[in-house]
Length: 250
Ligand SMILES: [Ca+2]
Ligand SMILES: [Ca+2]
Picture 1 (cartoon, rainbow, N blue to C red):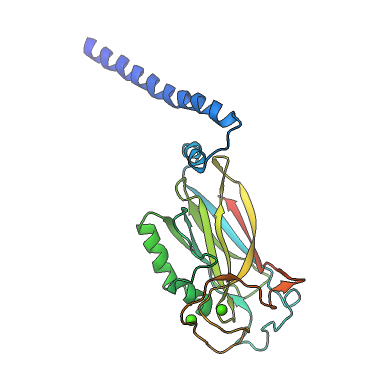
Picture 2 (cartoon, protein in one colour):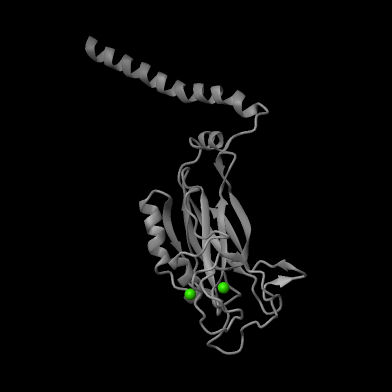
C-alpha cells in the first residue's frame, strides 16, 4: 500500500513538473518576443515550433490566363491547341528545397513539366526531397481545361516544412509554366487560416521557342529560369498573373 501511494505521489509530482515546464518556457520566452529586438529567423523558428503541428491546406487554382487578358497570339486556334494548364504538382518543404528558382537552370523534372505538362520525373525529384527530409508530401491535381472551373488539390505542411511551391504547365507553350515558390503558410508561429497569392508565368529555360506554338527548340545548355516577360504576358510593361491560388486550412 505504502509503495503504491509513493508511486502515485511521485507520478503526480512528475506530472506537475511536466505541466510547469512549458509554462516556464513560455514566460521565459515572452520578454524576448516583446523586446524591440530584430527577431532572427532562428528565433522565429524556435518560437514557432511548439504551436505548429502538421496542417493540411486545400489548394484552389483559379485561371486568369484568358484571351481577353492575354490577347497576343492566344492559342485558341484548334481543339488540339486548346489552352489549358497541366495538373498542378508541388509540395510543402523547407528552405533547402526549391521547385524552381529564378536564375537557376531547370531540373529535368521542371523542364519536362514546363514543356510536356508531365509530372514525371518531377514527382520522383520531389520524392527524393521527401526522402532527404526537405519536403513533406507530394501534391498533384488534374489538368485544368475548363477555365470556368478551378484545379484543386491539398498540400501538407508542418513546423519544419512550412513553405509551399506548386507549378503547372501553361499549355500549349515551349517551356512556360505557372508557379508559386516558397509561400510560407506560417505567420507569427501559427498556421494562417487562408492565403491567396498571384501565380506568375515563368520560362523554365529548357526550350528556346518564343511563341506558344513554336516547334521544339531544346535549350543546350539549359537557360536560367526567368519570370516570363515576353509580350504574351506583359501589359504596360508589367507581367500579369496567369492564375490565383487560394490556400485554405482544413
Ligand atoms: Ca524558354
Ligand atoms: Ca527542352
